[in-house]
Image (tube, rainbow, N blue to C red; front, side):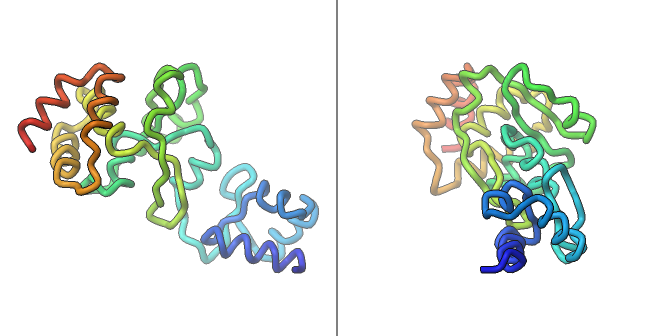
Length: 197
């Protein structure tokens, strides 16, 4: 396969986006990539990330590429997991405690930080509205995060999420209670579940 065809294939496979890292892994030099980007008129949307002019902008994917260790959480996770009635006004992500969040907060992203021992619990993947895979916390972890942060979120979002979770066929109540114990919200989560189940 010729290099241009290989790059075309990468762009097509990634819904109109091209990562420099993917091109390099495929054996394309940065010089050749630069020529391809100029000839095809790709726009640079972030460091090492280009987008074709006919692609839909995907802010979630751009955030994920720029901050690969970030995990979408709270209201954003609800939206990605289909547990919300509406799209979040502001994206929310979680980072490990001590991580630099200046760039994210300047973009208007709500950043939560948590100690390293709890950071990895419940990480899964979801598909963004534009069709890209991003890191997100699973429903059980997200419910616990919302309960922990209930003073900083709209109570309506929490109630809608818990009702949607309680109706879900995929709910995993033992896992929810295990996470609730990790995050010290087991009494509150149990009260919500007893009312709804």
